[in-house]
Image 1 (tube, rainbow, N blue to C red):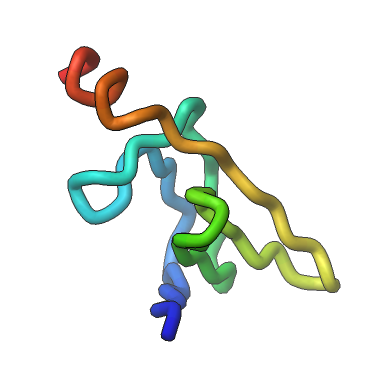
Image 2: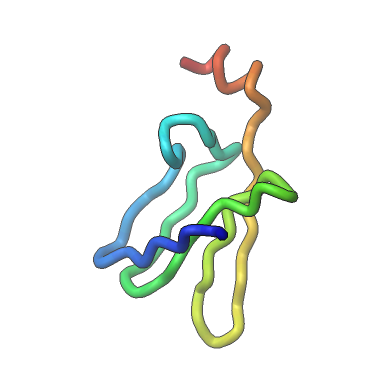
Length: 67
C-alpha cells in the first residue's frame, strides 16, 4: 500500500523520508497529494484535474555524495 500525503500549504520538496533525494526540487501546492512509487523510484504528485507529475530521484551513491 502506498501512503499518500496531502499537503496543507505550498511546500518545496527536495527530500522525502530522509532517504529519497530528488534530482530537482519541486513545489507541491496546498491540497495536492504526493507519494513514492517504489516500482519506478519516482515521487508522484497528484496535481488535480487528472494531472500527475513524476519526479526522478538521485542514486543512493549520488545522494550520499551530496550530503
